[in-house]
Length: 252
Ligand code: PEP
Image (cartoon, rainbow, N blue to C red; front, top):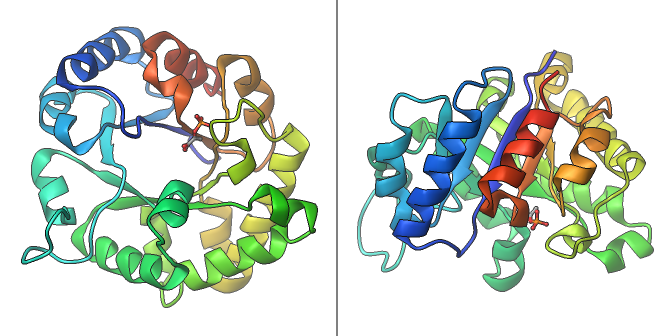
């Protein structure tokens, strides 16, 4: 059985004091949960402070993005090595907001993913269709393209450091989550594709998170789907109580 994995993507929210308050509260509520892997992804400016609170706890820290070089003249960018240095064990890559507002393409994301995996950082790799694409029945072809191009040249053994987050763009920050059946259908498609491309074991063991308006009220139903192995949570992760309720809903 795949261990559930729940991550909070704080996006461009929380100044240092607010981040500390959130993570201290979270530690109090879920600090003893071992049945679920828990990750928080604060903005870069809060990583150092949050890291000091999370040291020696069950809660891991991730970044929301990173670049594909170790160091150098890349103004405004942050390297995986810097993230590891500050205490991150994860990074998100390919979030739909990066694809949409910062023009990150499948090819660029593939370059980043390959580089990041050489550094030891683990990756939550986001995929998902827009509403228009879903309405035109393009969901599977979009997922196939994002996964085949995004994961191009990876070896089956690389996949133990990768989690896929299925995040339908129309469900992100809209309050409108995918139904459990819609999520299961997309997750089953993703798992079958990974099995076909990377082998039975890689597909069977791959955690697939759902993301898109996950709330305490819908978490239980979504996680009960066979191929839903956890969540990537935006809005509801900004409050310790609601994020904790989502985490608790994932305890098998
Ligand atoms: C996200 O941005 O990864 C996300 C899922 O956001 P929300 O939970 O707010 O829809």
